[in-house]
Length: 313
Image (tube, rainbow, N blue to C red; front, top):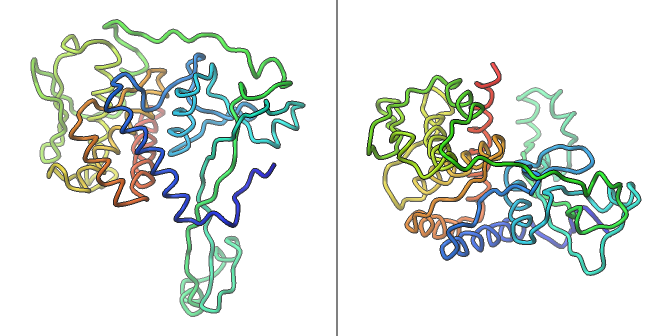
Protein backbone atom coordinates (compact mmCIF):
# COMPACT_ATOMS: atom_id res chain seq x y z
CA UNK A 1 0.00 0.00 0.00
CA UNK A 2 1.41 3.39 -1.01
CA UNK A 3 1.55 6.19 1.52
CA UNK A 4 2.59 9.00 -0.81
CA UNK A 5 0.71 10.99 -3.37
CA UNK A 6 -0.41 9.49 -6.68
CA UNK A 7 0.62 11.22 -9.92
CA UNK A 8 -2.96 10.90 -11.13
CA UNK A 9 -4.25 13.26 -8.43
CA UNK A 10 -3.74 16.87 -9.49
CA UNK A 11 -3.00 19.79 -7.22
CA UNK A 12 -6.41 21.30 -8.02
CA UNK A 13 -8.18 18.02 -7.22
CA UNK A 14 -6.59 17.85 -3.77
CA UNK A 15 -7.70 21.39 -2.95
CA UNK A 16 -11.22 20.49 -4.07
CA UNK A 17 -11.17 17.30 -1.99
CA UNK A 18 -10.29 19.11 1.24
CA UNK A 19 -12.74 21.92 0.53
CA UNK A 20 -15.54 19.39 -0.01
CA UNK A 21 -14.82 17.81 3.39
CA UNK A 22 -14.95 21.17 5.17
CA UNK A 23 -18.15 22.15 3.35
CA UNK A 24 -19.70 18.87 4.47
CA UNK A 25 -18.67 19.64 8.07
CA UNK A 26 -20.21 23.10 7.97
CA UNK A 27 -23.43 21.86 6.38
CA UNK A 28 -23.76 19.14 9.02
CA UNK A 29 -23.06 21.66 11.76
CA UNK A 30 -26.07 23.73 10.73
CA UNK A 31 -28.36 20.92 11.88
CA UNK A 32 -26.21 19.53 14.73
CA UNK A 33 -25.20 22.44 16.96
CA UNK A 34 -23.21 20.23 19.31
CA UNK A 35 -20.75 19.10 16.66
CA UNK A 36 -17.17 20.10 17.46
CA UNK A 37 -14.84 21.87 15.08
CA UNK A 38 -11.60 20.52 16.49
CA UNK A 39 -12.42 17.62 18.77
CA UNK A 40 -10.37 15.69 21.27
CA UNK A 41 -10.05 11.95 21.74
CA UNK A 42 -11.25 10.41 24.99
CA UNK A 43 -7.70 10.83 26.26
CA UNK A 44 -8.14 14.59 25.86
CA UNK A 45 -5.59 14.92 23.05
CA UNK A 46 -5.78 16.64 19.65
CA UNK A 47 -4.63 14.66 16.59
CA UNK A 48 -1.05 13.38 16.90
CA UNK A 49 1.28 10.73 15.49
CA UNK A 50 1.21 7.71 17.82
CA UNK A 51 4.88 6.88 17.17
CA UNK A 52 6.55 10.31 17.27
CA UNK A 53 3.93 12.04 19.50
CA UNK A 54 4.12 15.01 17.14
CA UNK A 55 0.84 16.93 16.83
CA UNK A 56 -0.61 17.45 13.39
CA UNK A 57 -1.10 21.09 12.44
CA UNK A 58 -3.33 23.29 10.32
CA UNK A 59 -5.72 21.60 7.95
CA UNK A 60 -4.57 18.13 9.07
CA UNK A 61 -5.60 18.82 12.67
CA UNK A 62 -9.08 19.71 11.44
CA UNK A 63 -9.50 16.71 9.15
CA UNK A 64 -8.12 14.08 11.53
CA UNK A 65 -10.10 15.43 14.48
CA UNK A 66 -13.22 15.39 12.30
CA UNK A 67 -12.59 11.71 11.51
CA UNK A 68 -12.09 10.98 15.22
CA UNK A 69 -15.45 12.59 15.97
CA UNK A 70 -17.34 10.90 13.15
CA UNK A 71 -15.83 7.43 13.68
CA UNK A 72 -15.90 7.72 17.49
CA UNK A 73 -12.28 6.66 17.88
CA UNK A 74 -11.17 6.54 21.52
CA UNK A 75 -7.81 8.13 20.68
CA UNK A 76 -6.90 10.84 18.18
CA UNK A 77 -3.69 8.93 17.41
CA UNK A 78 -2.55 8.14 13.85
CA UNK A 79 0.16 6.23 11.97
CA UNK A 80 1.20 5.70 8.35
CA UNK A 81 0.98 2.23 6.83
CA UNK A 82 4.78 1.92 7.00
CA UNK A 83 4.86 2.92 10.69
CA UNK A 84 2.15 0.36 11.49
CA UNK A 85 4.12 -2.35 9.69
CA UNK A 86 7.36 -1.36 11.47
CA UNK A 87 5.59 -1.70 14.83
CA UNK A 88 4.39 -5.21 13.97
CA UNK A 89 0.79 -4.19 13.38
CA UNK A 90 -1.71 -4.61 10.56
CA UNK A 91 -4.75 -2.78 9.17
CA UNK A 92 -8.10 -4.30 10.10
CA UNK A 93 -9.99 -5.71 7.13
CA UNK A 94 -12.16 -3.14 5.34
CA UNK A 95 -10.60 -0.10 7.03
CA UNK A 96 -9.83 2.91 4.81
CA UNK A 97 -7.05 5.47 5.16
CA UNK A 98 -7.47 9.17 5.86
CA UNK A 99 -5.42 11.64 3.85
CA UNK A 100 -3.23 14.32 5.37
CA UNK A 101 -1.74 17.10 3.27
CA UNK A 102 1.48 19.08 3.02
CA UNK A 103 3.00 21.60 0.65
CA UNK A 104 6.19 20.92 -1.28
CA UNK A 105 7.97 23.66 -3.21
CA UNK A 106 9.47 23.10 -6.66
CA UNK A 107 12.00 25.48 -8.19
CA UNK A 108 11.95 25.46 -12.01
CA UNK A 109 13.74 27.70 -14.53
CA UNK A 110 12.54 28.94 -17.94
CA UNK A 111 13.69 25.74 -19.65
CA UNK A 112 11.85 23.51 -17.20
CA UNK A 113 14.98 22.45 -15.32
CA UNK A 114 14.37 21.67 -11.63
CA UNK A 115 16.64 22.92 -8.83
CA UNK A 116 17.21 21.52 -5.36
CA UNK A 117 15.99 23.93 -2.61
CA UNK A 118 19.46 23.76 -0.99
CA UNK A 119 21.06 24.94 -4.24
CA UNK A 120 18.56 27.82 -4.44
CA UNK A 121 19.68 29.00 -1.00
CA UNK A 122 23.23 29.48 -2.30
CA UNK A 123 22.16 31.52 -5.34
CA UNK A 124 22.04 35.30 -5.46
CA UNK A 125 18.81 37.09 -6.33
CA UNK A 126 20.42 38.25 -9.58
CA UNK A 127 21.30 34.67 -10.57
CA UNK A 128 17.77 33.42 -9.80
CA UNK A 129 16.29 36.25 -11.83
CA UNK A 130 18.65 35.66 -14.77
CA UNK A 131 17.71 31.97 -14.94
CA UNK A 132 14.03 32.80 -14.60
CA UNK A 133 13.60 30.41 -11.68
CA UNK A 134 10.05 30.28 -10.33
CA UNK A 135 8.79 28.95 -7.00
CA UNK A 136 5.89 26.52 -7.53
CA UNK A 137 3.95 25.24 -4.47
CA UNK A 138 2.66 21.68 -4.91
CA UNK A 139 0.09 20.04 -2.62
CA UNK A 140 0.90 16.44 -1.65
CA UNK A 141 -0.71 13.89 0.63
CA UNK A 142 0.02 10.89 2.84
CA UNK A 143 -2.36 8.16 3.98
CA UNK A 144 -2.71 7.57 7.72
CA UNK A 145 -4.79 5.25 9.92
CA UNK A 146 -6.16 5.70 13.42
CA UNK A 147 -4.63 3.22 15.87
CA UNK A 148 -8.12 1.74 16.43
CA UNK A 149 -8.21 0.76 12.76
CA UNK A 150 -5.30 -1.60 13.43
CA UNK A 151 -4.39 -4.78 15.26
CA UNK A 152 -1.10 -6.06 16.67
CA UNK A 153 0.45 -2.77 17.74
CA UNK A 154 2.14 -2.47 21.17
CA UNK A 155 -0.46 -2.22 23.95
CA UNK A 156 0.53 1.36 24.78
CA UNK A 157 -0.85 2.45 21.40
CA UNK A 158 -4.37 1.44 22.45
CA UNK A 159 -4.24 2.43 26.11
CA UNK A 160 -5.73 5.74 27.21
CA UNK A 161 -6.98 7.48 30.33
CA UNK A 162 -10.11 9.59 30.13
CA UNK A 163 -9.36 13.29 30.45
CA UNK A 164 -11.54 15.39 32.72
CA UNK A 165 -12.57 18.61 30.93
CA UNK A 166 -13.94 21.47 33.07
CA UNK A 167 -17.61 22.27 32.47
CA UNK A 168 -18.67 24.50 35.33
CA UNK A 169 -18.01 28.22 35.66
CA UNK A 170 -14.57 27.76 37.13
CA UNK A 171 -11.43 29.70 36.33
CA UNK A 172 -8.85 27.81 34.29
CA UNK A 173 -5.36 28.86 35.36
CA UNK A 174 -3.62 27.84 32.12
CA UNK A 175 -6.13 29.76 30.02
CA UNK A 176 -5.82 32.79 32.30
CA UNK A 177 -2.03 32.80 31.99
CA UNK A 178 -2.26 32.41 28.22
CA UNK A 179 -4.60 35.39 27.84
CA UNK A 180 -2.81 37.63 30.36
CA UNK A 181 0.62 36.93 28.84
CA UNK A 182 -0.40 38.65 25.60
CA UNK A 183 -0.78 42.02 27.31
CA UNK A 184 -3.98 42.62 25.33
CA UNK A 185 -6.32 45.31 26.70
CA UNK A 186 -9.64 43.64 27.58
CA UNK A 187 -12.64 45.68 28.68
CA UNK A 188 -15.17 43.61 30.71
CA UNK A 189 -18.67 45.03 31.08
CA UNK A 190 -22.07 43.50 31.86
CA UNK A 191 -24.18 42.70 28.74
CA UNK A 192 -21.41 43.90 26.44
CA UNK A 193 -21.25 42.48 22.90
CA UNK A 194 -18.02 40.48 22.44
CA UNK A 195 -15.86 42.18 19.83
CA UNK A 196 -12.43 43.51 18.95
CA UNK A 197 -12.08 47.22 18.11
CA UNK A 198 -9.04 47.68 15.80
CA UNK A 199 -9.07 51.48 16.01
CA UNK A 200 -8.81 51.41 19.83
CA UNK A 201 -6.92 48.08 19.87
CA UNK A 202 -9.26 46.89 22.63
CA UNK A 203 -11.16 43.63 23.18
CA UNK A 204 -14.64 43.98 24.66
CA UNK A 205 -16.18 41.07 26.58
CA UNK A 206 -19.20 40.49 28.85
CA UNK A 207 -18.54 39.46 32.46
CA UNK A 208 -17.39 35.84 32.88
CA UNK A 209 -20.47 34.76 34.88
CA UNK A 210 -22.73 35.75 31.98
CA UNK A 211 -21.47 32.81 29.95
CA UNK A 212 -22.98 29.31 30.11
CA UNK A 213 -19.74 27.76 31.32
CA UNK A 214 -15.97 27.91 31.47
CA UNK A 215 -15.41 26.76 27.91
CA UNK A 216 -17.95 29.19 26.45
CA UNK A 217 -16.15 32.07 28.14
CA UNK A 218 -12.64 31.08 27.01
CA UNK A 219 -13.82 30.15 23.50
CA UNK A 220 -15.18 33.67 23.09
CA UNK A 221 -12.15 35.35 24.69
CA UNK A 222 -9.73 33.44 22.44
CA UNK A 223 -11.80 34.19 19.33
CA UNK A 224 -11.53 37.92 20.01
CA UNK A 225 -7.86 37.56 20.95
CA UNK A 226 -7.32 36.00 17.52
CA UNK A 227 -8.71 39.18 15.92
CA UNK A 228 -6.35 41.15 18.18
CA UNK A 229 -3.33 39.41 16.59
CA UNK A 230 -4.35 40.89 13.22
CA UNK A 231 -3.56 44.46 14.29
CA UNK A 232 -1.01 46.23 12.05
CA UNK A 233 1.55 46.23 14.89
CA UNK A 234 1.35 42.42 15.17
CA UNK A 235 0.58 40.04 12.28
CA UNK A 236 -0.90 42.83 10.14
CA UNK A 237 -3.94 41.06 8.68
CA UNK A 238 -6.57 43.08 6.86
CA UNK A 239 -9.56 43.23 9.24
CA UNK A 240 -12.73 44.00 7.26
CA UNK A 241 -16.03 44.89 8.95
CA UNK A 242 -18.21 44.44 5.86
CA UNK A 243 -20.30 41.38 6.72
CA UNK A 244 -20.66 38.83 3.92
CA UNK A 245 -17.56 39.86 1.97
CA UNK A 246 -14.90 37.19 1.27
CA UNK A 247 -12.30 39.08 3.35
CA UNK A 248 -14.71 39.34 6.29
CA UNK A 249 -15.54 35.64 6.02
CA UNK A 250 -11.82 34.83 5.95
CA UNK A 251 -11.02 36.84 9.09
CA UNK A 252 -13.94 35.32 11.01
CA UNK A 253 -12.91 31.81 10.03
CA UNK A 254 -9.31 32.60 11.02
CA UNK A 255 -10.57 33.68 14.45
CA UNK A 256 -12.70 30.53 14.82
CA UNK A 257 -9.81 28.25 13.86
CA UNK A 258 -7.31 30.11 16.08
CA UNK A 259 -9.63 29.67 19.06
CA UNK A 260 -10.02 26.00 18.12
CA UNK A 261 -6.26 25.44 17.97
CA UNK A 262 -5.73 27.19 21.30
CA UNK A 263 -8.60 25.31 22.94
CA UNK A 264 -7.11 21.97 21.96
CA UNK A 265 -3.82 23.18 23.45
CA UNK A 266 -5.65 23.98 26.70
CA UNK A 267 -7.66 20.74 26.74
CA UNK A 268 -11.06 22.26 25.90
CA UNK A 269 -13.41 21.23 23.15
CA UNK A 270 -14.23 24.01 20.69
CA UNK A 271 -17.68 24.38 19.18
CA UNK A 272 -17.85 26.30 15.92
CA UNK A 273 -20.05 29.40 15.84
CA UNK A 274 -23.78 28.63 15.85
CA UNK A 275 -24.38 31.75 13.77
CA UNK A 276 -26.04 30.49 10.59
CA UNK A 277 -25.16 33.70 8.76
CA UNK A 278 -21.44 33.10 9.37
CA UNK A 279 -21.70 29.50 8.21
CA UNK A 280 -23.58 30.50 5.04
CA UNK A 281 -20.91 33.13 4.37
CA UNK A 282 -18.13 30.54 4.72
CA UNK A 283 -19.96 28.02 2.55
CA UNK A 284 -20.42 30.61 -0.18
CA UNK A 285 -16.75 31.60 -0.14
CA UNK A 286 -15.51 28.00 0.06
CA UNK A 287 -17.61 27.09 -2.97
CA UNK A 288 -15.90 29.83 -4.99
CA UNK A 289 -12.35 29.46 -3.67
CA UNK A 290 -10.91 25.98 -3.10
CA UNK A 291 -7.84 27.45 -1.39
CA UNK A 292 -9.88 29.46 1.12
CA UNK A 293 -9.67 26.90 3.94
CA UNK A 294 -5.89 26.59 3.45
CA UNK A 295 -5.48 30.37 3.68
CA UNK A 296 -7.59 30.47 6.84
CA UNK A 297 -5.83 27.56 8.57
CA UNK A 298 -2.37 28.97 7.72
CA UNK A 299 -3.24 32.39 9.13
CA UNK A 300 -4.89 30.78 12.18
CA UNK A 301 -1.77 28.75 12.90
CA UNK A 302 0.29 31.94 12.75
CA UNK A 303 -2.11 33.67 15.15
CA UNK A 304 -2.15 30.75 17.60
CA UNK A 305 1.66 30.51 17.50
CA UNK A 306 1.94 34.29 18.11
CA UNK A 307 -0.25 34.01 21.23
CA UNK A 308 1.49 30.90 22.60
CA UNK A 309 4.91 32.44 22.01
CA UNK A 310 3.89 35.35 24.23
CA UNK A 311 2.94 32.82 26.91
CA UNK A 312 6.35 31.13 26.74
CA UNK A 313 8.33 34.32 27.37
